[in-house]
Image 1 (cartoon, helix red, strand yellow):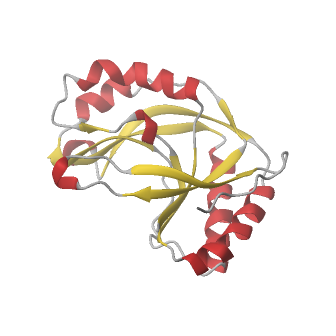
Image 2 (cartoon, rainbow, N blue to C red):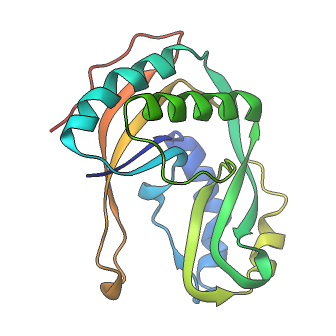
Length: 197
């Protein structure tokens, strides 16, 4: 199964971001806009994980979550990978306690490595919410400029999620499907038993 660990911004935060993006969707048809149901902040992408590794991973994620206190984040601004002039991915960034976010991502990654499911991507952590993708590189500088002043409402990160990602058939233009496979509260709360079915 294909898994990642991430954060799910609350509905009010997604509503605000959707309102900021809605006017841009029709004027930028060359972008495949991501459905808001898929908007999340990835902490660690794990890739393919077998059942045996999953059993070892679950308690490690619980321990990682309990090492951190809740903290505040908000969605802010925009950017693109690899760059706005020739982008394949348009994203919104984050503001708030980015230090706490980075430390949480490091703990989750370390727990995954100890469980025998090391993240396949060793690049520097760049937290974001993917807004749109494009197959061929596109100049998204006008979109990035329009969203550069965006500042969403602050929310308190209290929980991490293990997400199972089922890839859609790209030829049909489908989007992946995400399903929560577990959730753990940060230090101030009590963990919930993960669903693994």
